[in-house]
Image (cartoon, rainbow, N blue to C red; front, side):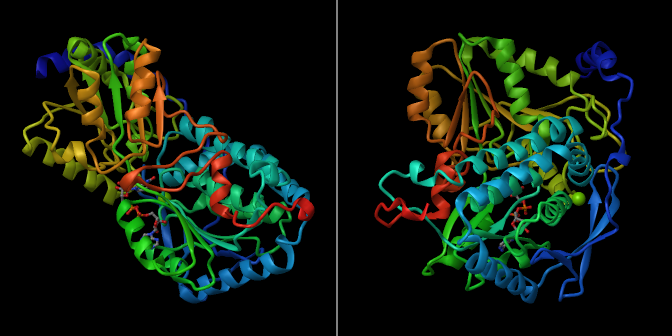
Length: 499
Ligand code: NAI
Ligand code: MG
């Protein structure tokens, strides 16, 4: 195995040794300290506490951000309530739409700075932030801006009404994009917002706060408060919140469900995943392998819908495995600011420890581990892309969310067998199917218990498409027309007069 690895290393060194193409840090302005964005102003936290946000690729501190306590949360919720009652719910829908369009355009104007900050703060390759995160964030604002004055057409026969104040809690894997997914539909539907970004990656949300301020959005309509899980819990438990939108771990999702049980708070929860990517023997194999690589290794596997379980039809298993290993060797792991980098830094030391724990578990469970021979930087948090073969269906590495660049591979013979295996997990967020046959695609998409099923592609996102899960992956949908409903009261009869 070692000799084979060395041959592959020699073969692919030239691919890896591309001249560095670093993006410039100077494209971004990061303040040394950020306060809380409440009622249209940046204000010192009542807690008087701050904590550091680091660059996971270098372990250097980028900035200090405020640690909001329960009193800060209360202040933000009050600002959101006043803005809702006095301004936002009374504003003509068309005017609301104009503000959302303005935010979308300003995100586009500041795209380069936002991409650089996203990469510095979270460790994802600049290519990803630049080509995916930031444009997708802008697209969500554009898309929902268009809906603001058309809600009665989205729900014929209903008189849609906003819920009030939305408390929104987002994770560290797509910081700006998640903020957009949460804020854009709330504003379009006439709700006001208190948003809490994840503690490791708050900087682009704070930059978005600057944009919102510059866009002259009425004070209090969007409030952005930083802090840890305790801040998130204070927001969930605040009595004057009408709706909770959460994306993150299944464990915290369950805590939130318990906390709001018996209250009138509505919730959407987008939680973990363990997606199956399924390759049939009639699939275009090179395209499929590229889709598998894109599905789990790009973005360090920090994707709730990552295709972390690969199922390959037995007759093409050897061929697919060889192609995968070859492609794995060409992946460049390292400086996220370099435009050639495929796999950047793991988001935090804790997450790297979690991934390394699973690498040990996998080997103890008897699976065979294969890692790319790529060199990884000595400083910062990095992990080689890893695949496990000889994996048992009941093993922890094939059942539990690892959230890292780790792929398990199993084989199957028939459609029914792979459907059963793919569905055999507590999660149900997404899946992928690779085949030449339309009939197979239809058979699988109707039987896979997953919110999104991609056919002959993977990880494609569009603001018009709904996204969300089954089972322990949560409930409710974000994106598209479906993403409007969780922010509306649709119990009232039709009356178009208000619009
Ligand atoms: P987490 O669920 O603890 O964090 C997500 C957000 O929830 C953060 O903003 C955090 O401050 C907040 N939070 C934490 N505890 C809270 C509470 N009791 N009440 C309200 N808000 C709370 O996720 P964590 O610890 O960063 O990652 C752990 C695992 O979760 C990962 O290894 C991964 O498996 C999964 N995860 C899934 C994500 C997804 O997109 N579905 C995103 C991030 C993590
Ligand atoms: Mg950070």
